[in-house]
Each structure stands twice: as C-alpha cells, then as structure tokens.
Length: 238
Image 1 (tube, rainbow, N blue to C red):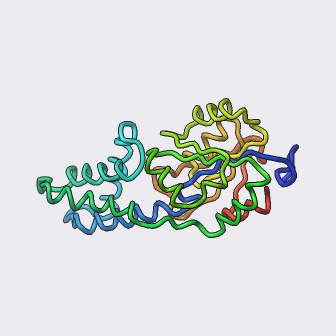
Image 2: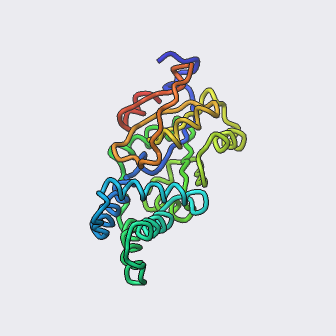
Image 3: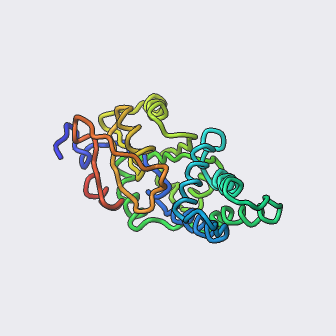
C-alpha cells in the first residue's frame, strides 16, 4: 500500500467502532432471537420468515427507538403482535421482554487480540471510540470492557452517517488524509466514513447484524479503503 503518509511511521487518527469490532455483541442478540423463535413456535412461518418479519419491525423502529436492547425488546414484542394469533397478555410480554433483557447479563467478551492491539496503537496514534446506540448502554459496556483508558475520546452517537463523520472532522479538527474509521459494518462504519472523505479499515465479523449489511463502496483511490482479517492485523499497518 503506497500512501503519501505512511500510517506506520506518521501519527494517524483512528475512529474505532465498539460492538463486534472490540467485543462480541450480535451473537447475544442471535441467541435471543433463537429463543424467541422457539417460544413463538409458529405453525405457518418458518424461522427464516420470522426473522424476516423481525428485521422489518426493527427497521421500522429505528427512527423512533434507535439501537440497543430496549429497541430490540420492542421489536420482539411487535413481531409477536404481528405474527401470533394469541393476544399479548402481561405474562407473554414479560417472557418476550426477558429474551432481550438477558442480553445485558452477558459479560463483555473482548475479541481476540483487541487489548494488546490497543496497547500498541495508543502511544502512536489518536484513538477515538465511535459507537452508536443508547448512551447509558454503550457507556456501560465500555466501562465493563476495561478499554476506556486506551482512548483519547469517546463518541456515542445516535446514528453513523456521512454527516456524523463530517461533524467529527470539524469537532476534532481531523485531517481526512490521516483519519481512519475502523469497523465491521459496511453500512455504519465504512461507507459513510468514505462518503465523508475519510479513510476506512474494514474488519468483517461473521455475525454482523443483518441490518448493517451493505455492499462496500469502492473509492477511486484504492488506498482509502483497507480490508483486514483481524483487529490484531492493525499492528502490522499502524
């Protein structure tokens, strides 16, 4: 990779995603979905079809409820109401909400190589955690992760789109040529960052949430987009 400024030898800014980049996240939602589908035990809709309805309800809820466990809980309830012939009794609601609330009880599981990689990067570059979702929920996960000390700043935003990244550039006085968004989501991490003129590092995760799937943008300047297999590969580049 040939660049005007070598990331290995010059100070860069790395905006780093949290969920499914630093720690496991969607695998717990997947467990909750599997439990919900088993509980629903729909006679006509296959598990795949139930998931499709759930994703539709989640997508509809995002503008008003945002992201996170509470939003997911409302999506499960909404999916039940849309598919079940049974009325939603208080007991059924409590059971369904329990599938979502169980997610918050799982310990934070760092992805392999994350902490040692942050230890390598922190003295060399400016690190900004950039995650979207509920402020208290995401902040709590960060504190429990033990990773806060590696970041110069933390940004918890309601949405990650091109305008959000442009605001980051202005707020932190970032140089677009030496600023990278690192994450697993094409929709939230990579494509909008590239659209805002930043560089990006795509690190795919096998369990990325379906609503974060999107074809990767391919910038005219190929070096603006880097694809790595593991978070720990960042040590070889930066």
